[in-house]
Every structure is written in structure tokens, then in C-alpha cells.
Length: 368
Image (cartoon, rainbow, N blue to C red; front, side, top):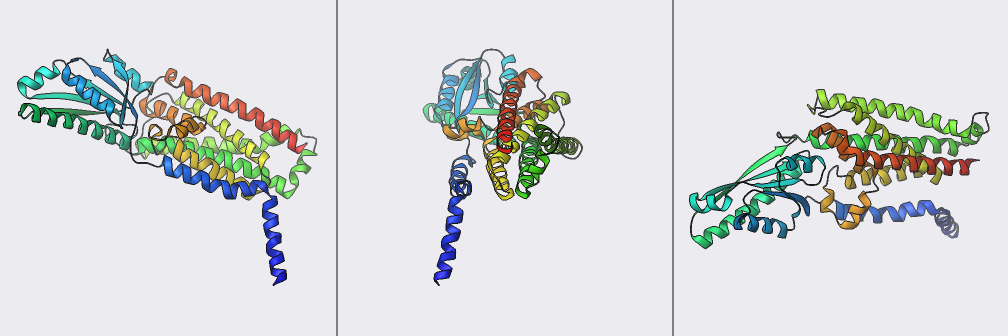
């Protein structure tokens, strides 16, 4: 029995000595429960909307106030020109535009009917349906208030218009997210495991002792995964267009450029992981759990970011996949010009340069 207890103590000491493994074992569950608890939600809250009011009467003002007062919407734009509707959607400033026609209140009081147009961004069909449903319920609530006040059967008819995806195909939503997830896993996880495997087997030192410069050895490890990622990108696009019927509405050239930037970021992350861990298991845990969960939960791939707590919204800004998924949706689904994705491209470029410099410098310090 004493021998058994001694072996148990030895195993505990062995685990406790590896601080990185302890951090993964004890820290990862905390991170996961926080992410799953706060990020996974089917509710839509604090969605940014715009108001285009040609009437500007008491009825439209009261409906606007009720929209603003609800937990679902935040009025961030008041438009004065119909051309601004397309602009705010392309810039990603709003997900819903409420349009009131002229003489809204007069039509309602004299004819008993009036209409309000609800224009939504249907690149995420589930979110678009929920937003239009919430807005319709608020309009219906105001209609009931008028009926109780005037004892007249008023009727406000919401006219729903879905932009970019009028058929509400779910493929329009998940294709950009799947692109980001696949490229991240292939580049980051596979690159880190491939390099750590050499370190774990002791062959990396042999390679570094060869006449080839260390930087060339590292780049040689990364190039195959860059090539595979590019092949996967082409496969996804071909399947999306010809099988899932999701057209590339924008520029294929700029979509490819954005994807290359994202691949560079993912490769640099994989290289960074390989400098932190020494075993393939640890590399798989860090790359798989550490990257896959944030991509799925905090990139806007599945759940709307604006519905999350402010802390998670700020944290999502450092997730490269958030900017990639956003730019793919704009270029591929919305078909916008490249000027509307310059912000995402600049952020990805800065991330790529920063991570590549830090990762290569740190890797060289550890292995030489």
C-alpha cells in the first residue's frame, strides 16, 4: 500500500511540475464555461438599427421610442436619404433599417391602415428572421395601444425585405464561418503539431545543425500547410457555388487576398503555439480548444456578437476569425466593393505582421 501511495504522489508531483499542463487542465474549463455560458445565446439584444422617417409625426416618433426602449434594439443611425440605407448595410453599421413612409400618422388615422418597411441584412437568416419578428411585435404593440385609445380597429402592416439573401438560405450564413474555422484549424493546429513533433522526437536540433538557416527550416514546415489551405479554400468556394448555390457576389480576387492574409495569421499562431509547448498533445489542446472555441463562439460565425456581454465583445476584437468572417460575408455574400472591407484587411495585415515577427523571434530564441 505504501508503494502504491508513493507512486500516486510521484504522479501528482510529475503533473504539478508541468505548469503549462496544469494551466490547460485547470484553466481551460473555466474559460469554456464562461464562453459557453455567455456567448451561446439564441436571443438578439442591443442590435444596432437605423430609422428612415419621411413622416416625422407623433406615431413614428412613438414607435421609434419603443424600439429604442426595448432590450433588442439600439437606434444608432437616423437616415435622411434613401441612398444611405444601402450604405449603412455595406459598412456594417446596422442590421435593420425601419422605414416610415410619408404621412404615416395621417394615413393611419384617416384610413385605419399604414405600412412600415423592415429591411434586414439576411446574410444571417436566423438573425434576420428574429430581428424582423421582434420589430413586428413592437409595431403590433403600438397598434394595440392605438386601438385601446381610439376604440378604432387600426392596422399597421409591416413589409419585410431581406437583403442579400431573400430566400433565407442557411448556407449563406455558415459558409463564411466554415471557411474561417477550417483555415484556422489546418494552419494553426497542424503547423504547431508538425513543428512540436520534430522537437519532441529530437530531430529539430538535427535539422537546425544542418547548413540550412533555421528560418528556412521553419518556413519549409509552413509552406505545405499554406498550400493545403489554399487548396481547401478553392474546394470550399467551388462547392459553395456549384453545390450549395452560394454565389461569389463580389470580387474573387479580393476574397483570395483576404483569405491569404488570414492564412498568414493562422500560420503565425501555429508557430507561436509551437514555441510555447513541447508536446504534441499540448499543442493539440492549445490549438484545438484554444482556437476552435473562440472561432466558433466569438467570431460571429454562429452567435451574434452584439448580444454578448461587453467584455466578450471587446475580446472578440482580437479574434482574427471575426474580421475574416465579416470580410468574407461582405465580399462573397453582399458583393460590396473592396473599400468596405479595408478596415478588416488592415487589421488582419497588422495581426499577421505582429504575430509573424513575434513568433519567429521567439522560436529562434528557443532553438538556437
